[in-house]
Image (cartoon, rainbow, N blue to C red; front, side):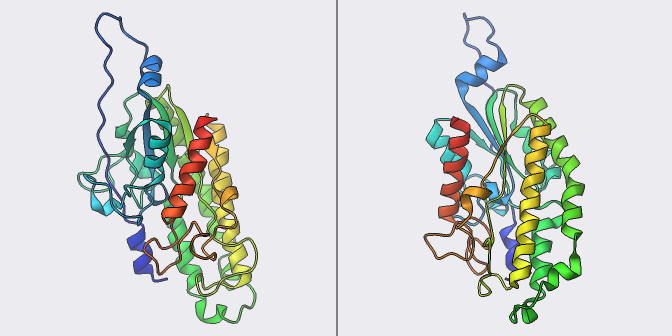
Amino acid sequence: MTMRRMRASLLLGAVLSAAVALCPLGQGVASAADTAATAGRYVALGDSYSADSGVMPITKGTNPICLQSARNYPKLVAADLGLSLVDATCGGATVAHLTKSQYPGVPAQLDALDGTESVVTVGIGGNDSNLFASAIGLCGVFAPIAVLNLGAPCKQTYGDHFDRLIDSDATAIGAAIEAIRQRAPHAHVYVVGYPDILPQSGRCFAQMPLTTGDTAYMNAVQKHVNTMLAEEAQLHGATFIDTYTPSIGHDVCQPAGVRWIEPPLSGQPIHPGPDGAAAQARIVAAAISS
């Protein structure tokens, strides 16, 4: 995989505006909680794994640089559960883009919240500290020697570097969840984790040019991201949705029709394809329904 393709896959999207629910005349002023429950307003926040960047077509009316799919999991969830969706997801977003504009004309994602939400999902963290892109890029440098499948050269070189980045991002993730809960006080907030990218054992050099040892190393990094997100969700009154465990066996190494994550030279490099977006939607919808 080239860094150019990786960066292209991480480009992101735009926020759709939503109207504030109004109380009917003659019924008095309904509580915000009643309004939210009646409206079933769902706001989706997050990066390319929530925008399902690369799954075509792009959502009409959004900034194309966000690569927000018209078939991403928030839209599938909203259709399944009968929720009114405001989709603010944008590829490449970091926690900072929840509170500030990512691109000119693209509002901060939290601006989509108006306090009447009943459901909010947020999938964020993989781009903070350039985590996923740098991990894949830096470990990919060892491809010429990884063909021999000896040891774990990336792990030997970088050690706990990526783990320290993840730990350093935890405070910002927690603060973001708090900000969401303050702006959407009647919503059930769900933090959506990242699905499994790599196999649990062995390797697939043709798709991901890593040694077996570095495949395990990268797997551990991704597990750490999800563990951090789950801990911050619990600490700050949100519900964590685990997409990693159900996606085991559907990693990038699997054949088409089985894999949920697409290989580097596809239209969705190291991101969910159409099958992955649909699988994410099933998992998220089931969690919200329960």
